[in-house]
Length: 242
Image 1 (cartoon, one colour):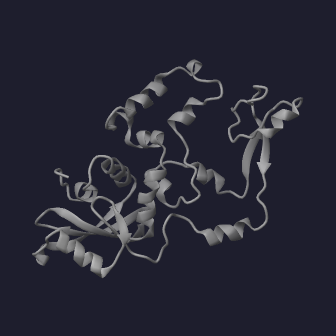
Image 2 (cartoon, rainbow, N blue to C red):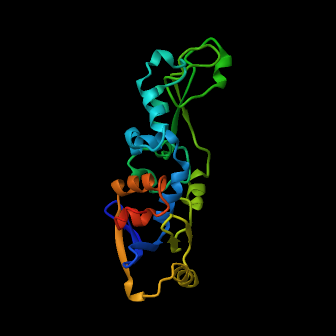
């Protein structure tokens, strides 16, 4: 399990006779990628999968906002922010770049971040409001909040960043990923138990398959995770019965 040319590699144990994935052997990068699915806003999921391919009616909601004229939106609402929401998670690792979108954590990774306050110089009550969007409207006086101020990090920020690390799970650990994307720490006993539960009698039918996951595969995996419990078999073995 590792990374090559911007892709994550995943080693699968496959039952050739049943044409199914028994489990995948994964490292931190892939598990972080999977866990990141839960932090995605619905609007981001719709955008990644495209509204026409969404199961159910969520895509139609996205389409409605897309078609609605800005005059019908509240003055402090930016329609683009609703359609393309940003993800705010300090634990992001390789997932955003793999899925091909930018999170607002990418913007916050600099030493300083830009904020805006109300442009009115007369109302000191407005100074209690801050925004990261220069088009935001002040709740007190309704002026545009486009007066730029800069956030300055306190001492010791770099040391805290190093100690905290990135991602969701610890590295130097091998994880077992089931066909339905369930994750657990890898162990010999778990592997043997799993083969027994799948009633695998012909060990010669087992083979390893190494696959690479880039942006296309990442988006397809996100889509498959919403419609099937046999995600890995569906994506990498072409098991249409999944």
